[in-house]
Image 1 (tube, rainbow, N blue to C red):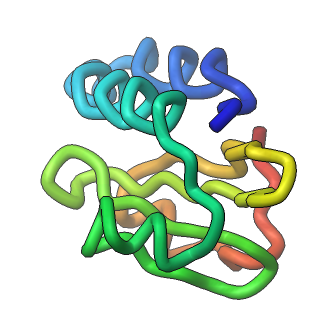
Image 2: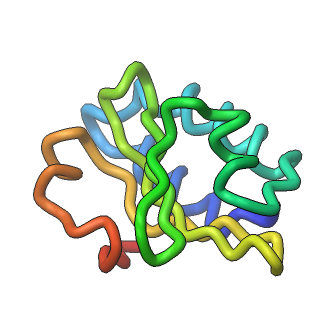
Length: 102
């Protein structure tokens, strides 16, 4: 998959208090760019705890569920578009299907 944009992940893990997200986000990124997800089931096969949502969104638990990553999947184009990364508390305040923070 082509991940848009790694810079969003880097900006997040550079924030004070979020530096522990670097390793887990870097691992997710490395796995995502090697993936060939053609459907939501392909994502679930690799990440059983991922949540498949409306508007082609997938929510990944990052860092032991301390952080949440919302990605819009464009399966045919092979694109995983980062829409939100934040703490679990920040995630609880967003609409997953509409968020477009990055």
